[in-house]
Amino acid sequence: MKTNKKIPTIKKSILSILLLLVLVLGMASCSNAEAPDGMQLASEDNVPYCLYVPKSWVVDNDDNFSSAYFSATDTSNVTVTSYPDSMTVEKYWETCVADYTASLDDFTVDESKTATKVMGGREAKQYIYTFTFGGVKYKVAQTITTRDGIIYNFTYTSTDTYTDSEGKTVEGKFDTHYAEAENILSEFIFR
Image 1 (tube, rainbow, N blue to C red):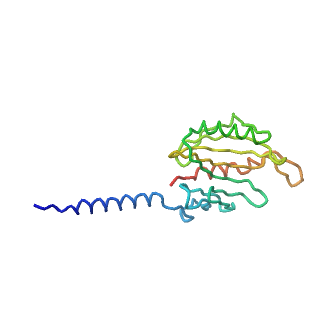
Image 2 (image 1 turned 90 degrees about the vertical axis):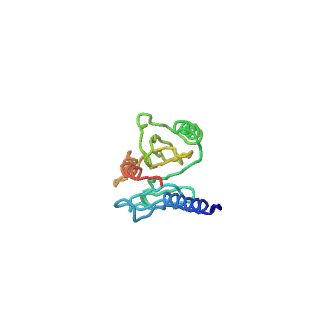
Image 3 (image 1 turned 60 degrees about the horizontal axis):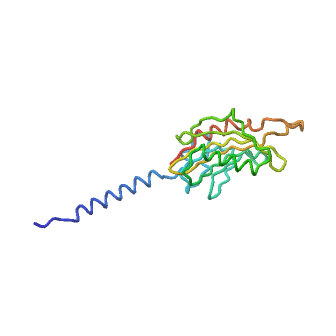
């Protein structure tokens, strides 16, 4: 009796197509239609995450990262970058500290502000630090997580001071948008 060997091949083909469909749907692109209320998409289709920022912010992307800033006169910003590396978050942070210490003036970490956060459903660490560049003092909240052998950085950066309506230099500009940055982080998702 002759058996039909095409049936198992057809079943394998159907299973392969279904598996491919599941993978494609799992990597479905993000859209503004799915954006949380009051937010817009700030990431491109070529990254494995969705970054949503307030509609009032200006989206400023590149092929290698996702970014948005508050306005032309207030460049407080958030940026997401990724690096293929199987380091732990702690080891990666040690590398960052060594690099920042060597390249940034007045680099100082506020150890009391180090916190555990959630980034895209994954445990993350947030480090807050300051540095001076071009005579301007900046303050940064860098949140780091790993996923599938890739390091993801969510970075909120702002100058640490601002000039008020009377022309006086005031400390605390970082705090002006920190709550928004935390909200942006809470809406970050991996695809």
